[in-house]
Image (cartoon, rainbow, N blue to C red; front, side, top):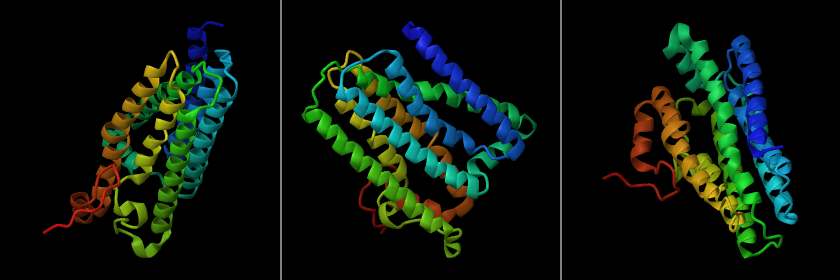
Length: 262
């Protein structure tokens, strides 16, 4: 099977899954399912690319598969629990209201774009696995350490926000506890940090440039396109001046000490 065929099959499968889930959200009016699907599909696509490309470099191949699956399934399970137990995310409710009668057309395009992104975000897994060195060395161990820190940070920040949100006394209040005191989006930061692991583990791959490109693209997506902008817009709509004050004192992305306003 050619590499082009492997990628085409992966995209076709993702597109079909997103089509079916678009039909589900049409019935349930809860588009949050797209985030759950993306989280599960991305590592599965990565595993498909690695296995079907017949990459055989011993321990490193299975290390990358393990890291990718753990990351995606942990995130997917967390998001699934939230989507199934809460009303639709405010970002998607606003999208429906803003698009009016064209909402379902926009949703269809959005779901299919997400299908394409599963391929884009799976590329660093595949590229890192192309490292032909069969031995696990210093950079691999450093990559594993970075991955552990990133996953731990993401889990902690997710749980801190979840506990804050389920407390009815915090309705309309900005979360500034724990990691949220140092970054307005610590979950996004640690999400981005984990991709550094594949840059380190993939050093020596003939496609190593793809791990760097993926890291940059993911940063741009999170901070400029899909993550931070929409989340902040929704936070301002729901919390108003309190969130604007939070923006003045707290780093948007990288965890830093909060500013003291004079």
